[in-house]
Image (tube, rainbow, N blue to C red; front, side):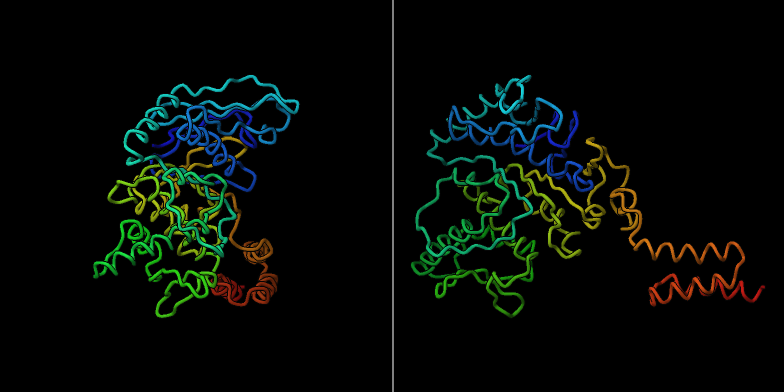
Length: 409
C-alpha cells in the first residue's frame, strides 16, 4: 500500500497542482507557511476514508473542512492515487458559504475495502491490514496511565487515533505491559529466555534506532516505564524531549504494526503509509542525519512522507526523494544529497547565510577596504570584526592579507 500522487485544488496554502511521492521515502522541504504540513494533512483526509471503509461498508471519513479551503475561494478538492485501488476524490462540503463544485469518488476504494472486510471475516482477523499513522509536532508527551486495562486489543485498534498527530504513548505503555506480562508468564511456565514475537519486534527496532538504550521494561511500584542508558536505569519521563520523541514514535509504530499483522512472522515488515511532520523535531543533529535512513531501513515495507527544516536530514537523503515547496507549488530538487550544510541552507532552504547579518557585513567591510587599497580602514574594520567575533576562522586569513598590503604601501 503506497500513495503515488496527491493532486489538490485550493487546499490551504497549496495552489492547484500535484506532488508525486517516492514509494519508500519522500522528504518535503520549504519555509514556514509554504505548505509542508498541508501536504500531510491532505493525505490524512484521503487516508481517513480507507480506514473508515475497512471498518465499515458505509464508513465515513473526513471531508475538506471550511478552514482548509484557500482564502478567497469557494471550493476545494483532494485527489489521492493509491497503488492498490487507484484514486479517491474528496471535496469540501457545501456549508458556511462554500459551494460544492466537485463530487466524492470512492469507486476504486469500494472494491478494495470490500475485499479486506471479507478477508477479516473469513479468517477470523488472521490476516493483515495496512498501517496508517500521522505524527504531528506535538508528539513528545510521555503519558503514563494510572490504571491498566488487561484486555486483548482488537486488530483494528491499529487505527485508533492514528491520524490525530500524536504518538499514543499511553496506549503503547498499556500494550507493552500486557505483552510483558504474557512473556513473563511463558518464561515462568517453560523457563528459558523466551522473547515474544510482539516485544521482539519493538526491541529490534529500538536496537536499530537507539542502540545505547536497552532493557525497556515496566516497573510496578510505582508504576512507570524504565530504560537503561549505558549502566544507568532511568524513568522514561527523565529522558530529553528528543529521546522521548524517538521512543514514543518507535513504540507507537511497532504496536500498530503488531496489531495490524497478527500472522506476520516479523511485524516490522508490515505495509502502510506513515506521515511525520518536522521529523527533526528536538533531535540532536547526529540523530537528524540518521533518522530518515533508519526509518526506511527498519520499516522496509512502509512508505514514509516526512517534512523537515534540517539540513542534516536533507543532505543525507537521495536527491530524487526531495520535494521543494514554494509559492504554493512543488519543485524537484536539482541537488541535495552530500551537499555541504551551507549549500543546503542557501540554495535549498533559502537561508542567505549561516552567519548573523552584522558579522557578514563586517567581513565584507574588511574585504572592501582591502580592494580599495585603504589599509588603515581595513585595519579598523578588522579590529571591529575581532571585537565582535574573537575566534572567527576568517580572521587569520584577513589579518594576513591586511598585513601583506600594509607592507606594500
